[in-house]
Length: 623
Image 1 (cartoon, rainbow, N blue to C red):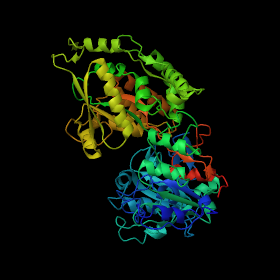
Image 2: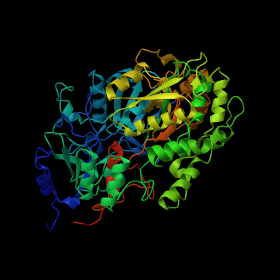
Image 3: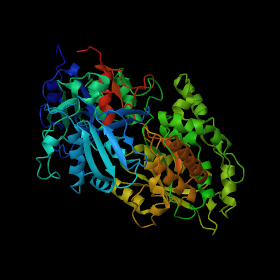
Image 4: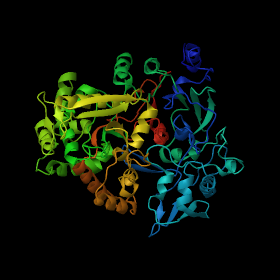
């Protein structure tokens, strides 16, 4: 094959396995091939992203649609996309003025104006059942324009967070609809928006009726998009989102240079890939390889509504009975960043929260004066890694985190003894009533394998301490049902207050912990507080004050720091490690992906921000 006019050969190779239709013939060197986040899409002909159950991560949100604003969680960069500048509120936060970017056009040649924004808000608000409809009905009193590129939104009550609806903080947003298409739609809840009219830098070229792949072609007028105006021409002429199946298929495809960006692999699968393809890289060129800046952390979610977990000292004893180095090394082969705060230690949040709070962590004491913080965790893991992999780690804290909590079984024992716990002759812990202390941990059975590994690693730690522990693995349905109603003691979960974004304002993640929203056991929670933390009054005040503050107000960071301090004192759950991703990129046809050496944005293909990476990729010239 002289030139890799790739797709024909690939289709012949794989037809009969799962591809239902031969892919179009397109030049391989002009095509970026991306792993499909959703796997096989069940309703591939639906491009209506504004209805419940719709999917966006297989290309529509990344290359077709656009929002007013984006934030890159890796760097904290605020991106004015369809909006020309940040939202402007009046003094009492009851009115927002939005200046729109001029020179933007829909892919069918119709200019983007204020009419599209106004129509989108009114259309969704007037059609209950559409995504964000309830929020818009609650918040928006009126919306109108003062000129073709200025929109004013009047709010029903003061709300300095109202612009979040129109902002992609991590994934998704209220994407703008083309008025000239949607105003003729009879039923917005059943309309498939197919073919979609694009406002992003690509248009839909074709897709597999069985949902295995979606092909997008660069617009001839890419200059008339926010991506083109901000960052220049996207380099790939085509972007193909494709689902190969299991990890072994993805590894084989990237080894053949037929899959440029993989969503995620197990560490074992990446080990095979890097042996088979010298061009495959993740975030680090060498150990620990993985990208460790996802916007969620994992931890032991302790059910505060159940005895004895309602006792703060018990929660702290469980924390000090964990050797985090053993968890990271034995459970994750050393590939995890530790998280002592109830937040996510991303590159950006480390800069704005972890580093400023480290001196407080070092001086923090429990009620008896004991200092539990350990500043040397990252350095001990680095010593292990340097010996294991014959490497030199320049900045261990940048890789493994600023620190964690001491492994101190003696202090943990002291905390339990003062609450009436005791040990039997075999060294096993007994509850104050003399019965065996048995702890059950629930964890995912067949998904989010890192959460499952965390559960078993922590169970080993607590058994070593003398607690009888059982790990129960559950499929997604029963797992989330039991989490919601509080039918668990400890869960290996993620999210909630452990999440982060690209802005310092954490109100979105902690608002649900207000006392007003507390839900008793047996009733499904509608907030993130599935572990039933009965927060101190100080937390209610912090949430209220933060909710009344604009996201860029410096006071927001001060309030967030105060919240993190209270969470550490109370230790309602045990934050442990960030979510890592082996999202492997192939440098054979394309290069200049975000990396530890060049962290210009998050290295993700499944977020809506992905479109802003495309102008910064570079072709290698290989054919």
